[in-house]
Every structure is written in C-alpha cells, then in structure tokens.
Length: 135
Image (cartoon, rainbow, N blue to C red; front, top):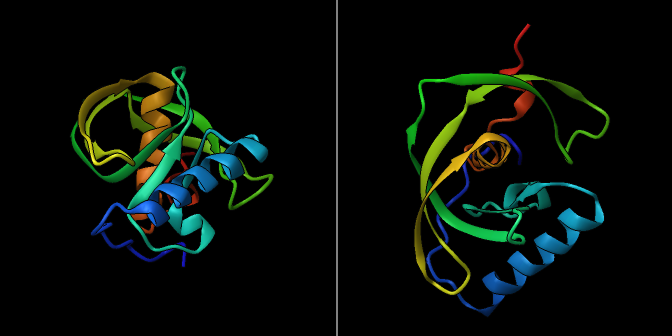
C-alpha cells in the first residue's frame, strides 16, 4: 500500500472531512507532525500536518516550485517506528491545495514545515523516506 500512488479526492464531503479529523487525532496521539492517507490504508491524495497555527488538512496537493537550496536533516516516519535517517529536501516550496471546506490555497512553506509537507507528499506518490536516505 505504501508504494502505490494515491488517487485524487474527487468530492470533499463529510466522510473526507471526518477522515481528515481522524487523521489529525491519530497524528497527535502518536506524537507525529504529519500523516498521509496511504499510511492508514486509504489511497487518497490527502495528508495532515502540524503547523504553529494548528493542524492542517491538505487535499489534492501540488508542489509546483522547489528551491534550489537543499538541506539535509534527520527524518522518521510513523509507518516505520524507530527508524531515522538523513534526507535531502528543498529548503522552501510552493504548494497549491484544497482544504476540508473546499477552499483553495497557494502557500510558500519554509524550513521544517516545508520538510514535513515534502515527506507527506512523497507518501501520496508511493515513496518512503528510506528511499531518499543520503550517506
């Protein structure tokens, strides 16, 4: 399941909203900073992330710009408990997505927040962080 590409969310209805809220609860219960739908057995293009303004539900995201400046930092994953390693990611990104209320967003994310989004985006593309480890 974790190596499959997720399908777009076609309709944002109450079941999708509830899925997002359940994912936030799971993420926080497990002390995570992000959780993608494929990690809980749902092949949907959505994930949740922690943010200083509160958790966000991100549906059908598109990363359309990545900075040339990269940083290596240690990552882990709720799907692979106890495994950590260095991953190179863009320092900043621009992303378009829809929230649980059907509102469109276009944001620039930087630093740790950008790293979390890229990690979760990889999940909906069927890629695990362990495939991106650097020496």
